[in-house]
Image 1: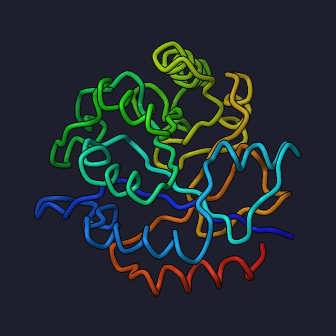
Image 2 (image 1 turned 135 degrees about the vertical axis):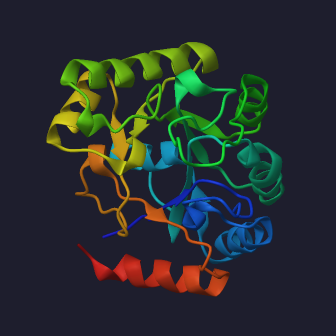
Length: 237
C-alpha cells in the first residue's frame, strides 16, 4: 500500500532571538539542502495531485511527498519560492484569508513579521504554487461556537476562491486544533480535505479531513529528513 508523507513548513528564515517558536524556523541554506535532497530521492507532487489519487483519478509516483506551508509568511515568497521555482517543486501554502498583507496578529507574544500580500500570492500562483484555506483569522476552531467556526471556514474558502479564481478544497486547521465537530463543519463549509499535525504518513484509509502532516524541524539535516521519511513510510498506523 502506498504511503505519502505531507511535510509542514512555516518560516524559511533564521529564528529571531525573541521567538517563542524556534522550531518553526528553517534557515534558508538548510531548506535549500532539504529541497535538493527531496528532488533527488523521491518525487514531490502537489497536494492537488494527491487528492486526485485519493479520488481514484490518478496514480502515485514512487516515493511521493507533498510540501505545505502554513500562515503565508513573506519569507515564503522571498526565500522559499526562488528555491522551489529553481528546482521545479510544487507546494501549497495555507492562508488566513482576512490577514493577507498584514502580520501574525494571532500570536500576541510573538515578534510580528509580514505575511504575503496579494501581488506576491498571484505571482506565486502563476508559477504553480497553490493556495488553500487556513480560516479567516487563524483561531483555534475547537474553542469557537460551532456557528462562528463554520463562518471562519466558509468565508475563508469563498474569499480565497473569489480572489484566486480557483476552487479551494482543503483546510489546514490553525494550531492543528480539530475534533469530530470541526471536521463535520469543514465538510459542511465545502472542503474535501483537511490537514492536521501528526508525525505519520498518509495511507489510502487515512481520513480525508484528517490528513497527517510531518513538521520539519531545524534539526532535520537532509540525511536525517531522508531517514525519517524512509522510517515513517514503513512504520504503518
